[in-house]
Length: 450
Image 1: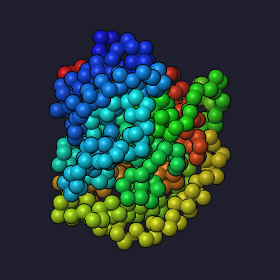
Image 2: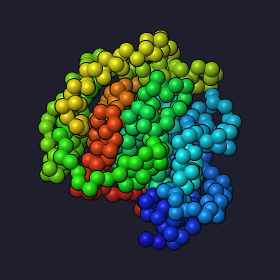
Image 3: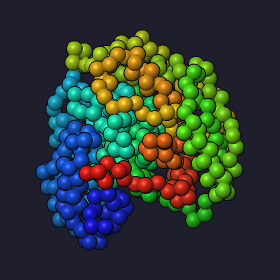
Image 4: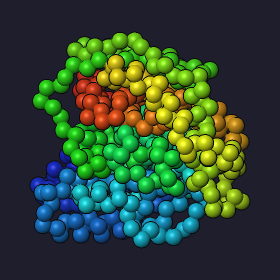
């Protein structure tokens, strides 16, 4: 392969450590790819071309490259996490355009491991919705440019899927990593509470939001997660036999699931069963009140984040979302509803090692000016295609999205893996088995049409 753009983070870091390529060469190739493709994709709000090249040169001058797990790896960062010297707009014209004095702790850890930040990626305003568009651009799915990449880590997912970077940093408060990963054919993991430092917005949406990696391979995901968590998630020599519950019913009453996504679960279940795992059809006991609980927490988190911003500079859908949420802030803060949900679902996930579900209920909406459309229309569109992700933010348990087949359009389809606290390594093992036994193409075909 002549180009380093499109290669895995594991390959790039190894080559830089062994001095088979310089950090500048790697970064320059990715910057050239961004310049060539991102006008159609809309992944980045800000590309740090000169700063990234300077940082690559500084990295090359270090003597201890062999100790850097991400040596020279280009990285995209979601535009709600601080990058030193850059403004963070959080997808909004209402936020201050002032440079950050310090890196967010997750960005600092990735840089200390040798990663080079090439840019900040587009998000919906205040990272509220499952589509990514606003005053700084529209992030499109590189597999189907007519469709949204998803949200709110939509720009980060689009950047990785198009091979603009091998890794991206995002976060997930109601599915904001898993939704765009599922749309764009990536692997991601929303870690459980406390595994990776959070510090997102004003209180992490009451502790529901977690930072996490987006990657094309489980190996890359494992590598980046280890840096973010400052912990090891190594592969076992022998993989234990797991008990897996396969479920296809929507957690939210009244939301139907497209056949492509139920088929993906059945196919993934078959792959895992043939690998020796015990797979049973079993539906979690989701409460009928789950939709109301999710809406209360979703809107209340926005209300807190919007406090102090000029309402006149917020999009109408954001203003309404925050206004609805203000009445729920006090009851949500108690955490009582989340504790009741954990108590209801814990016995089920104590019986099984892992829950397997669809990642989404249907393909993503058309890309377009969703930020100019009404609140109810946005709410219904988001709920109809992503009912499977919110429960696991409410519980605070780890959850992954893993590619598993294709939609009739040829775009990716995905499944979700969920476990109790502390099962991140188990989820990674199963995701790796799915990857090995049912491999998925790394880079979206938008690159082939360039």
